[in-house]
Length: 79
Length: 512
Image (cartoon, rainbow over the protein chains, first blue to last red):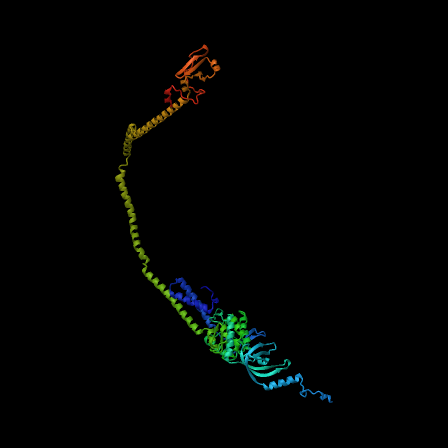
């Protein structure tokens, strides 16, 4: 409940948001807690949204050294 | 000259060959006769020396044929020979003169029918399965939303394009391609190295470590896909700490990597679908959640607000609650001063009526006087009252007195009995009884005289007989100036205890 947002994966944040909304909808939560849930929900939603917005395609190809290990990644165009 | 023909031996006119010449001729004959052959047999022993050539045996139940695939051919073989595999080898026969051997130089190998290959594949699958490489417990869940997707495949061709397209449709991500040949001899080692290479990438290094790996290849013949059946590929996939999706061939093709992968996708496109969720779906479920969150909160507030308003309505206004009390207070406050003065007045009146008239000194004096007389009267009555026999005390005294009488009588009776007893004892033990038998006790004063010498010294002696004492004068000086009879206190020698003087019975009263 109080895990820092930056530590949460999209999936964890979404799951927490789901349970939080259900709790809020149940209506039997004290007002102060409802407000805390509401605010946490806003933060979770923003976190999820930000993760969804970071949807950028980037394709790179591994470059290998003589030993066959990856030495780097070079952008590559594939259509 | 004739010597030359002297000893002709049969067949001696046959020309001689050197070993090399003969070997060369045999080689030519064999190579011409068997320049292109197809041989069906089971692969026996296989060896791959460092030279890169590939030596193996082809055999059936009665014969063995040595075979070799030269380095260049060996790397191109679609079906690498494997012990136990039934194959059809294509090539030519040749000889190896150095060891007097003939052998087959193999150009191509094909499995002898799909059944043979499948049987071998099944054997290998069972062996790896027995090792636990395909265990359910080894399967890792795929990440819900990977940031980086590693793809092991050929960078050219439809497969990578299909994967990228599908990813773009669903959720564009970072894709790292590890290029590998997807068929031929080089395929398996390269694929295995790629899987291990992705796993070897450090977290947060220059090259991002993938969150999921897709190993993909398009459809092809069993031989085309053979690399993905190789043990090293299967082991690399099973060892991968990064969740791995295999997508090799079409849906109907099954390779051994599929068993070791965490997920098997029927096609490369399906692998992309498994790898990422649909972004738009997520956005819409997120916005649905957002709607619910806002609605739920406003319901919470509305509900609370309504309840508050309801309660507020039910709650009487503060002034209304106080008004009646306040009025009562005012009324009482108004009456208070009047009540106080009224009370004082009333009390004063009472005092005057009942008290003040009677509180005069002469009244007090009279009263005192009357009470004094009463005291005197009582004092006068006191001695008489005291003197009056008090019936209760008298009764108690009577009872005590009677009790005392009883005790005294009892004690007297006991005394008498004791005395009678003692007397009886005295009579038995005392010297008086002796006196009765005619003995007498001689005394001088208080002293019992027992010797003649002692008696001679005394002027007056007293002889006690049974019935009394008789003073006698010894030696003629007899007089009766002896003291009155005394109780024998020291006791005669015969007397064991001091006894009361018997004749003085009245002495008994002294006991009491």
